Image 1 (cartoon, rainbow, N blue to C red):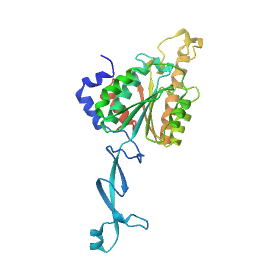
Image 2: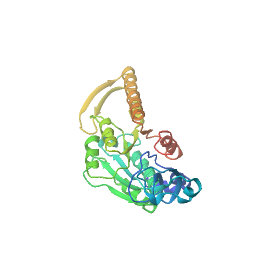
Image 3: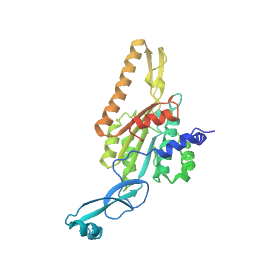
Image 4: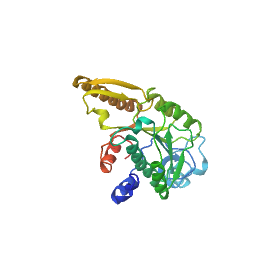
Length: 294
């Protein structure tokens, strides 16, 4: 059975997914109705509170019963339930094909879990492989969860990493703003920060889900090695000693720490996964601690 479909094998896990929610600070002002609540004056379905009348407020929302008791004007406020566009930006560059277990396979499962959360809350979920020129595939409602899972399984590795170029093409085709979840190893030679900054500039609520393979954190081999760049094919002969391995581990830790600092500085959720992380409650715990779900 394929990895994404196995999510349905654990009813308790699926139930937990349904009660999680993507943490979005800015909600859409669209007209589709969902399960996210936004406090706005005026029309709505759920009464929230009163506030003092201000010049220019719509008189239709004045509470005349309160005026009769207090001889003061108050406006009714309601909670408007809205749904959000959730963009799953799935890095499928050739570097994501690396690792045991593979990074792309793990990222697809995370995308399946996050997509299920969105669908369970009536959000519109769109899968956008990076790089790619094709239009994304959209899903709405929990009934389309299986279609989402099977679609993710068809995302195959290809191309070189260019996160900024990819998100620019995506944002240029959209007027609506929503939640953008970037699932990637973030190993872009041009840097991942410019892509995230661009999404923030375009008023997306961004979350980073960083994926790495265990051997990327700590190379298991010593001695002569021939390394090949997964995306460009460039080869390099090296001799890996204990000192160089220690230096490599230090650089990797610094890179990960830099991602965490950057995410905190931007106020965005960030979760980091090794692909040997057990998929299930452990994965949900990492996503929760990173502020990606709650």
